[in-house]
Length: 298
Image (cartoon, rainbow, N blue to C red):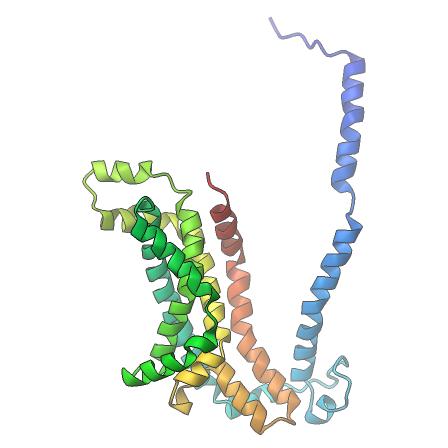
């Protein structure tokens, strides 16, 4: 026997009527929020447009006082001039190597330290280690700048390798904070099952925990890459050889020497900014996933 629908026509009509305001609310535009988002978008899009427009202008167009004007006619020669003046292939390779080494060291040290802290939280030493690492986030860079310069020179790390190591050390506190929040959402039962099968702590981390850290690895890696790629002060203070400077430092030298060639300067800025935009566009979904999963404990 088939089930009998006990809903009366009046009840169905009332339910349909009650669903209409809900659908209306879902389709309604929140104008105040839309206006705020539009204004916030303009603060990013307008400077980006000015950068692109100035990069494709000639030297005469760049100094006409109207930064918002269209580059007519287009002048792609600015990129070729910036490429040669800033020794872009060399400085780009140095920046890429420093950023890549920073990401690898940050991921390795932060994930291991966070795993040890979270799984040994009942011990006072690990709790205080976590507090110690977080306290480093509030330490101003100028306080430790001079000791770092002297120490890296003493141990012959006044080069891009030393810059990458220092970048990773400065990223350690924030990265441990993110990893710790994410690791607390991973059930301990997974590790206990692996221990029953005879796995050691080292094997559990590499075979069980690390594969689960994919979203957070992407999040921490992107933050570390952007911070290292855009940093100016640390490479300029630590690196002794001017030929091994990163892109931000080279661009600063270029700007002080060729300050009137605004079109060439903006072309070099655009070339330096392109890798960070591409990396973030491809990895933004992992960044958002890592932050949201680390914020909510399952």
